[in-house]
Image (cartoon, rainbow, N blue to C red; front, side, top):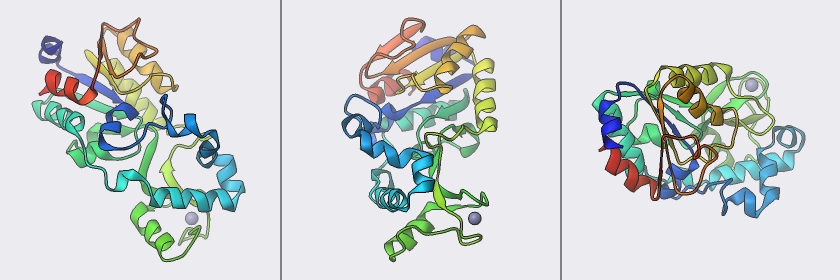
Length: 242
Ligand code: ZN
């Protein structure tokens, strides 16, 4: 496996929630996920409810305030991917995570495609203006329960892709082009069940790349992968990449 990494000229890495659980950020969809245990919590992530119901928005802002990502530190798994970029063979890092920990670890923003958006910014649902999340959270701390857009008064939301919203077609195209261009594709910490991102390993394999799955649990792509490394994600990435 290390030999494959050393031989590869162009590596694409896809990361999911499993790489961030080691930083104390819960996996929302996993077996012990927040949504699996409390399906009602998922409501705040559905765009229809969010727009229609001020109570859902108030609850969402409280959840954002309390989110573990604000104090989370990048872990050894994130750092292994920084080492990969420093070696010069990381083509693109596609992530389903919204926590921004890859950039905080040291991967350059240009290499990271956040297909599900980022919780570190807010976006106005009416005028599309974006702003740092921290500023909006300051307003919530100061007593605004559902701070409106400063420019147009519209509804603000974290700049993440909620259920009922489509992925940014530009980001998706970048991810697909990267999958087509690489000779080694690593799927890390993702169950590979959420489409269209789950298609990427198949796209890479069809274009001739080796595909390696690294995860704590079985994934939907295990049977088709060239190799499956199951275990502690940080330890595996450190062993294989650093
Ligand atoms: Zn606005």
